[in-house]
Length: 421
Image (cartoon, rainbow, N blue to C red; front, side, top):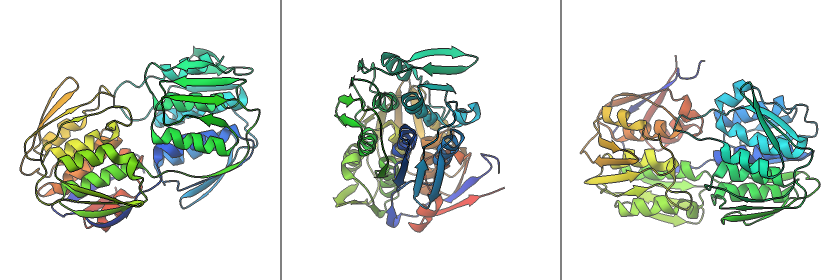
């Protein structure tokens, strides 16, 4: 079936109730999978979500010569014999996270050739910081016929200061530096939990990294890496999405497999809006009574409010009492869901990076279209509270980041079904 043919049909008005298990984090799984290329051994990864992006990463690793076995929630990667250092343009265009291959292949093979990565259209996300970081390690980088070529006989440790705390650049430099000669220090590094998870995996392989989770990461290069087994952290964005869904539907939901600290910014805003959030071990209990109230949100790098939760939060605030303001500081073009929410009766005005949301009593079901992963799931959440039926098209975007979304929502009492052509 061609991407985009499936749709979600949602009948709104049902409060979510019950228990949902959060999958392993997509944004932790993909760099960990790429990092398996650094070892001429066998790596096992557990709590792997079944997502389109994960399947694409498996395809890329296979094309490069790795042997992959997989089952429900796990995969085993044998990277003993890497036979290629080039990623086909078709796969690069389909998934932005394919860029993680660059640091890993450069560290292991000393060369990599790939085209510019694709992914969600949420504004400019240049890989300049990735390339500058790799060049600081001694890589020679050139561009020919639409391809980026990076080469280095042996990478050398370096002191690198990122202009912006980019998660992808931080992780790519980490992977390249683990096999470099000498010590690498990354300053103004991203602090996201997924960066910490990658550090933990690499250290299990024999790397010497410390500082992930702070703005300074130190990597002492080693000569070789070995095999490792690793459990991926829970997906904090999926958790945040279900927390928002529970609150905006006036529901009562327990989320399992959650690290509550990773979702503190979302928890704080939900409480401010009038919802109740109670962490209980590796679970989080979220419930709400009555209409939520308006709050202001400003997206920032971790530990600030995550940009990946901005569209879902906007859907929630579209029905909250009062006027809310969301300021998007990370991506310049991350308001594509606004026009679709307006189709559903939302009152939202945009001025530059600010969105002003005047909450309405009730959204109305409509035919809408997902423009990207998080925008798509925001429309699903809006459909859960809308009057009548909502049809969300182009849900292949949503399948990139949410495992069995319709099944999880249905298990909580929502009326959601996938329409296939």
